[in-house]
Each structure stands twice: as structure tokens, then as C-alpha cells.
Amino acid sequence: MNMKLFFLCSVLFASIAFGQMNILSEPSGADVLIDSAFVGKTPLRGLALSEGRYVVKVFYPSIFAWNSLVKVETVQVSLVGSTEKFFELGGLLAVNSVPPGGRVTYQGSELGTTPLYVRSPSRFNGELLVQKEGYNEERVALNAQATTPLVVRLQPKQFGEGVIPADVLSGDHGMGVSNHWLTYTSGASMIVSGVLSAYFKDKANRDFDGFLQSNDPGLLSSTHRLDRWASITLVISQISFAILAYVLLSE
Image (tube, rainbow, N blue to C red):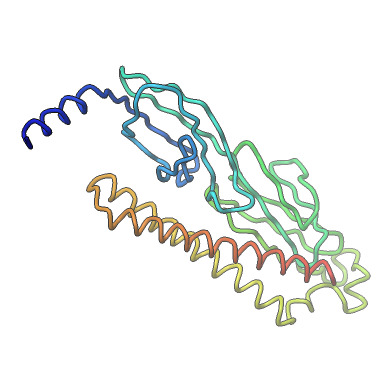
């Protein structure tokens, strides 16, 4: 009886044909859903799927982030060869300055004034220029993989270098905000939680790669746990940035 059941299951399994799908993204590490089911993080290679059409959604940096970059595509999987889908996710840029109101220029184009939040179809990778009348300009090198908000501290010009802004002469030029405990606390929380989020996400990616190679359920469980921690710390980082922006703007 057991042999007959085993033979029947073998026949049914052999009758089901699968194709393969590879899902890649730039930047990598994006959450991937296929027909609303979470399947892992990019890059994903050799996914076994039956022939048909699938809705593929990718979220960067995470499906839990309120400001995620999201792409959705319908992909046809066939039984012949391997289907590969590449997603160019673009970039996010969040910039604040102390004091606020700095003009932000990227590759010769003015993006706006701080506090600034910009989405782009391509990644930000180059030099950022922040300028404000009465202050020395600041240049910041951008990393294409960076997702944490930038805080640029502008230094007032010395007498004889240019026009001294009225807020500097009055003693209320925004630098005093840095002495406020809430500014220090929110700034430190933003940096620490941002670093932790990146660490947890990187560890989750490694554990998931190990799961794909070994099919160890413990690694898959670890991936889900680390993803939750990465999402929680990322939310904390974003909340801290919002608090910091509010404090600076209220001044």
C-alpha cells in the first residue's frame, strides 16, 4: 500500500513542470513579493515557478518603510530557459541643514531648500552642495547605497568674508539649537537606529542566501526576525529625523 502511494505521488510530482525566474534590482536588498507572497530579498536566482503570469512587486529599502521605492511588473514564466527580471529602483534623498533654508544643488541642478525630501528615478551618487546667504557653503559626497537622512551643519561667515545674516548678529542663528537636549537625542537616535537598521538588513540578506543554499528552516526564521528588527529600527530612524526637523524648523 505504501509503495502504491509513493508511486502515485511520484507520478503526480513528475507531471508538474516548473520554470525558473531570477529577480535582480539596483540597489540590491529589496523585498520581493510574487502574487502578494513574500519570497525574499534581491538578488533572487533560480526560483521554481509553474508556467504562467505573475505579479512581481519590489520594495526598497523595505516593505515596512513608509517612503519605500516600489516597482510592480507582470512577468511571464515559461518552461523553456530561465526568466530574468531587473528592477532599477532609483534613489531617495533626505537633507536637513542647521540652520534650515539652505539651497541644495546636485550636479548643477537646484533641488530645493532644506528640509528637503526628493525621489529620483536614478540613484544619487556624486557631490551635494548646500548654500545659504551669510554662511560658508558645504559640499557632501553622496553614496549610492546610502538611505539615511543627511544633516548638514552650516558655519556662519566671519566678519570681512561677506554679509553676516541677521540671525547671527542677534545670536539666534540656529547653532544654539544644537545645545538643546532634544536635538542631541533625536540626532543620536537617528544615527544609531539607521546604522542598526543597515546591520540587521545586511545580516538578514546573508541568512537568506544561506537558506537558499542549505534549505535550513532556522536560517529562514532568522531572516524574518532580522527583517522585523531592521524595519523597527528604520521606523525609529525616520521618526527621529522628523522630530529633529520639527525642532530645527520651530526655531
